[in-house]
Image (tube, rainbow, N blue to C red; front, side, top):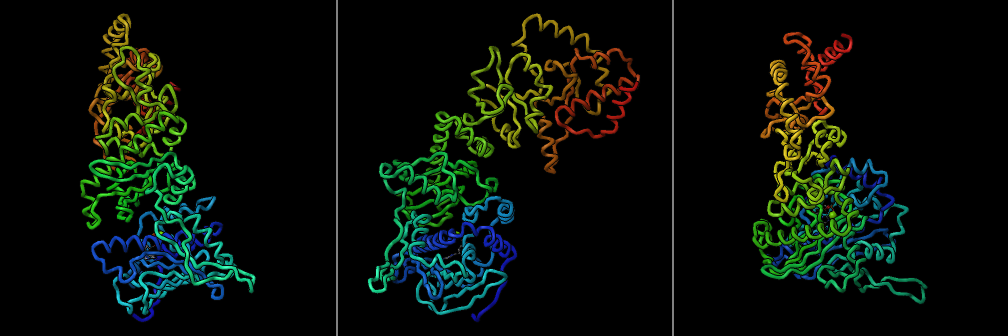
Length: 626
Ligand code: ADP
Ligand code: MG
């Protein structure tokens, strides 16, 4: 192929601009990114070579070499990994195929403190080379390809890049950075070594650099042609627990997660039994910016005897635990099967189950012993964990115990166990209300009777709560019951006198109810005397089997259609406004206005919207001035 000049994809141009301009204060990360690409390339070769050993050619020992040239002002990162064909070079180094590009860019633009970890998290590491280089040349030959099928890719990192065919003997890739003027500090063995030590110690391949020697005559360090490893190249997880310090665990976490914060908790175990594997799993303290991207790549990597196999998130962890980071290394999975087969494998499923249980124990432990830490975790990942209620029926009970809520007793941190411990004598259900905001939930008229009776009600205001409730019906044998659904039967909590009084009042009130029903026949399927109201005149409830109005509203906002079912209006016979109805003759236009107002107010009180606000205002004004 003759030399061709091609244009970067538009997103790449933007990323290049952002990365080079906003990450300058953290420029040394370029080396971490390029070394990790080199290491990935070797992992890929090792995997492909499992059923095609000839790919190793005459160089089975995989390694990474880094060197610099003071005269030419270049740094070279070489690997003997998988390499790239011309097509692959154009594809991988000229376009970004990943989802979430826009979020990434918005985040990078918005960040006050430009966070260099974002590039690693997002995976656009290659371009970070342009922070320090005004030209990058990549020379590469794909494993198995003939020397004449080598490729040279080159770019100044602005609008376009060049590709051409070259002859290249070594397998794998050289990335040559031509440093910008002013970046000479990186032309130092000490500097490069210290960056590699800082970021790339865990890479399980040797990273080699030319050995330096003191020259007595020149009185300076000179480069020899002997190569020496500059990283430890020891996969941390393969060592025994007793040999690893907490600081090493923390450092390893930083390296695999690109997270600056220390992890919330970690667990490292060798599992023996039907399936033998090692797990080193971390729960982060902070949510990444792309937590809501359910198809992002996984934080957990699967190795088989230290050979990287895949990081297919869902095969290794349930989606609701997608924030977990770490490594799983199996001792007995077959190496020579395809990724597709591995995903189907029963052993992988067993590993997935085992790891899920581990993570849950880890969380249970934090919840039990470090309540403040758990509260922080809950703030970051609680909504994600709730997804598990529907996704993981096998662990539903354990998960339910990990949930935390706001309630009428405490604004946060209430567990089902706390709630059940505070249940009143005779109380049979766990009561909850769903609403858009905590304020709306707290002020719901439906809560009045519960407040008066001292019954705790859980206040659910998270968007996933409605969905979660469609999978969770009970806890510890006690049904979950919405205070805004169906009739509330608090009769077990009433004394005889109260019961009698309520019955009599209901009887006397019947005629008014009939008239209200007639007035509101298009808006309410029933009108009844309420047992839940104390201070408010009316509230809206839905039938036991119907969708809550909160959920119906959410669906509507999301542009989906909600099944149309009329709600029930409950009125408080003791309230002055309702008493006024009794004194208003039937057929009088005034009665109808009052009925409509009652209904509209109940709708407003629960955060709903009026279909005809102007009519409401007119009616209220007529009442105020009349
Ligand atoms: P990521 O590593 O997250 O995929 P990068 O921007 O770091 O993103 O790299 C982009 C792609 O370029 C890689 O996925 C890989 O396909 C290719 N690539 C980069 N460096 C190398 C290398 N040394 N050998 C082979 N392929 C590479
Ligand atoms: Mg990379």
